[in-house]
Length: 163
Image (cartoon, rainbow, N blue to C red; front, side, top):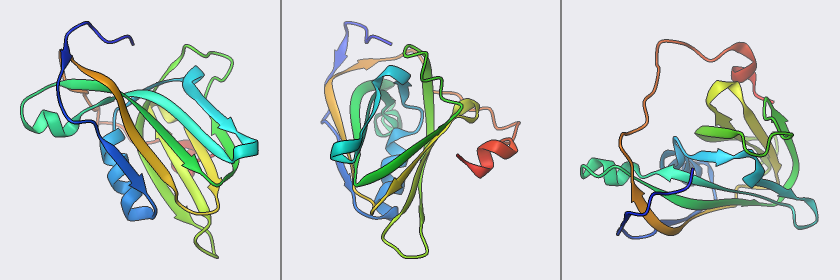
């Protein structure tokens, strides 16, 4: 997952999410991000969940450029993390992020943020409220192709339910 040596120049993305609408925008920018399991961390004493990945730049793709960049994503006010089908004992395993959603509790602003990955893996974050930040880090690099999606199948029941 190391970037080739041909960096591209584009403005770095820096987004904050404070509600479900903001989180939907973050999710769109993160679609198809590649994340090493070892680059995912929950820091309970700071109530922070963080990860680093390589996101495909869908905005650049609209201009005909195929690029990826390293990015950091973190959530604040995280009370509990539950993982499903995430091989935490395999830190070099790669997950492909498909979507990030928010389900409010009966008493908002608390709720559950879910990160859905290809293959049915998911991570559920029980949060006090939506508070997230996405930041691009370092140079971009060209890639040979855009991510391909297989729409022939459906999510299995476990993936639909979430963790």
